[in-house]
Amino acid sequence: MNLAVPAYPSAVFDRLARWCLVALFFMVPITLAGANIALACTLLFWLLAGRWRERAEAVRSLPVAFPLLGLFGLVVLGCLYSDASHKEMTHHVLKFSKLVWIVMAATLLVRPDTHAQCWRAFTLAALITLGFSYLNIWWNPSWSKTHNQGWGV
Image (tube, rainbow, N blue to C red; front, top):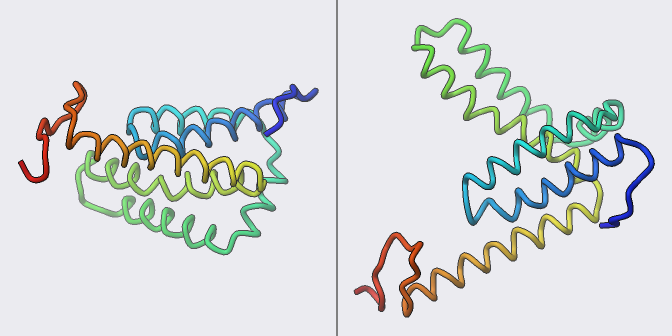
């Protein structure tokens, strides 16, 4: 991606949102806390970037967007008449809110360069995770939860 600073604040926030999305794809295989921080930053910069008409067009062009939003709406509608506790309803709404996050991320992934950067970041993080998993067989890193060297020891 081009690192030159654009003249308009919406373009700066859009670029920051795309970089946070790349960071999100990198963090998903490695750490949940980092992924949540990157997700929150992506949402913040996505909202600050505006460009609502452009984003609405991107959502309309995605065939999976309306089923995802409809499923989330169905969960929220079910919570309105449910006799479940407030804690359980909040849990389900937060869990299914990831469907809305997917639609938000898809509006950022329409650019081919962002799409490619996200794939590279996720692949690199998956390879790092795989490498440390196999390295854990012969070496005992301090952050490892298993502390078992060797094959099946």
